[in-house]
Amino acid sequence: MKNSLFIYLFLIIFSISTNSALASSGICQAIVDDIPTQAGGRVKPTFVLAKETVKFLTGKSKYNNEPQINTFCNILKAGKNQAELNFPILVEHVDTKKTLGLSSGDTTLSIVELINKKDLIRSEILKQKENNSYKKDLTKLWNRITTYELVYSGNALTIYAADKEGNLTWFPISELYERADLTDLITNSKQAYIQKNGDNYLLELTYVKSHIWSYALLLVLIAIFFTVLRKDMKFGIGITAITLLLETVGLTMRVLISGRAPITNMYETVLFSGYGAAIIALGILYFRRDKIILLAGLGYNMLCLFMMMFANNMLNSSINPLVPVLRDNFWLSTHVTTIILSYAALALSWMAANITLVKLRLNKLNSSDYRYYQNLIYTCIKVGIVLLAAGIILGGVWADYSWGRFWGWDPKETWSLIVLLFYMVVVHGRYSSWINTHRFVLLSAAGFMTVMMAWFGVNYILASGLHSYGFSEGGAIFLGTFFIVQIVLLIICSKNTTSAKKV
Image (tube, rainbow, N blue to C red; front, top):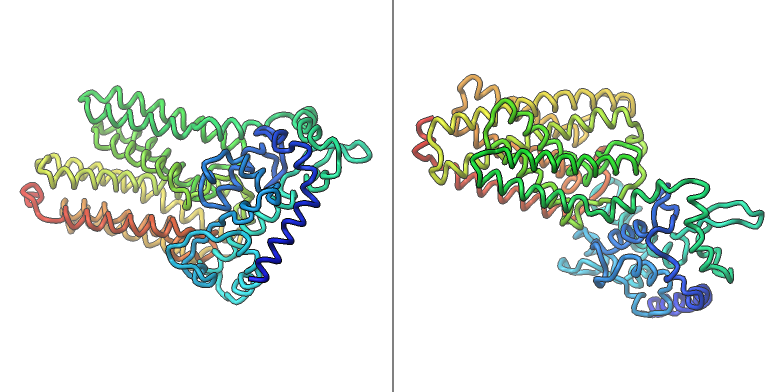
């Protein structure tokens, strides 16, 4: 209690001494969305910095339903408002909560209490010999505390201004508090930066504020609507093509902003897999004109867009520096792209299998249609197997180049091999008639659980290995829910029906 009181007094005294310039100069009126700032190893608009900071600290898009730039400024001048010293910081892992004395239902702890427990958090991190999910969450919590302190102290926000010799450079705003013209420096920093470096950084502001993925989701829903209700697929195909064009624009913008392929984190792989699945669906549709494959592609694309927009504690949309092993655009663009496209093709088989099982359970299919749909699923799986095998081989070559070994039984490597072997057994079983049609469709629906384990489980459940770069409690809950729903659906649809008995 005494330590907490001491921290309160320290923060207030510190704020009075350093933030007096903030109060008198109206700094928050000068900090607008398009001011350039240097953060995360690159230049970005202040709006993006504020948005990413609020999301990282709280796990939510907004705090108190106010604009992110306002929240950012409130932290910057926190000493003026004592309530801001109770700013909630996200705590995810159940073991982290126990260490901090929280109940399992608590999701946040105030910044003051966390600062008071920094020594405890540091000691817990040092205790962990393995880089497990608990250690990763403790490290993420430590980074949240550090991020808050950087914003609060004025070191997170940098301004492009002239030094004493007149040379333009970046200054943390904390170094400019004593300048009488601080507000003018902030206001003029945009023009000064653009004159020397151009306005390419503003593309990110356009990208973030365009809500391009929201419009893509709306178009996908419209495409599904027309595909289901109309016998003619022309409208559905046309709107799907427009959706893919819009998504291509969004992906291109992200590539131009980051300077790399859009497949470097969980958010981007989900985005790219939905995009890839829709393209593969249109390709298969060219040879096999049936609604089910178009609905599978649109349905999976829709699920991916929903995840991107609403999985707040699971997927991080920020464009951040890459870990060293990923800083190779050639291998990143070949190995990871191939793997994600294989997941997209297998996702098509999963969607088509589940649609088929539901229609069969409702007695909407005869034995002939059932066999036909099985062949569509079979085609998707064959595409997925070829891409996955190629991706694993490319990954081994990259591993040899990066880590000096082709294969090391890392969890991601192991689970990718499990996925490949599972689907190869299913395909060969069906080819040899060892697996009948009904069992094949059931296994195709169940098989995607192995993909989800390789894709999400290594990060969100195992949270270990060279391929795992973080932990998210939201991701673990999502994956568990997915498994339960899929298993329940399989149990319901596994009962023999009149159509199933004939095949």
